[in-house]
Image (cartoon, rainbow, N blue to C red; front, side, top):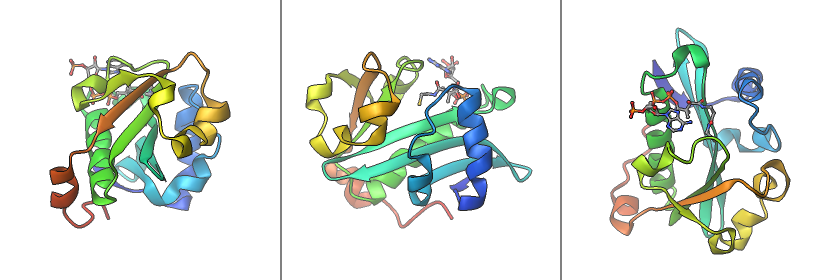
Length: 156
Ligand SMILES: CC(C)(COP(=O)(O)OP(=O)(O)OC[C@H]1O[C@@H](n2cnc3c(N)ncnc32)[C@H](O)[C@@H]1OP(=O)(O)O)[C@@H](O)C(=O)NCCC(=O)NCCS
């Protein structure tokens, strides 16, 4: 299994994965450049996408094929997305979830209110229309040292 940058050719598999988990497809095609996939024998078995905005990034579409769950793929995708955020000198990563608020604290995410989210992130399609108002909002701050230490891109 490898974690690598997605390409436009991965979008049908990514969309099928998100649909299978009832996760929003809205605007997902706009963020392929900062999307990561987990690939096993050439097949997409997981995805995580980062949307970059002024004031922070939005982590969305973290999903693993049910047949491949429980093998740390979700962990590796989340960690790779956070590494990418460090490389891009992002101050904080935000996410919305209705299903996995107990998964993300292990990576340093904490629950916050919508009002604490930068305006540019709140203006994203995910915030404005794709996710229900009842979704939990979470934030992980990326420390300055992590941002400065981030290696050149670790994903191909
Ligand atoms: C959440 C998800 C990405 C985790 O992927 P995964 O590859 O199965 O997870 P990993 O193997 O890396 O980690 C397994 C651990 O996460 C926990 N976990 C998995 N899904 C969880 C969830 N929805 N909520 C809380 N904990 C969860 C497992 O209990 C396990 O815990 P342990 O390490 O204490 O045993 C996957 O379950 C999934 O695709 N869920 C549906 C889509 C979703 O809800 N995405 C998040 C919103 S964007």
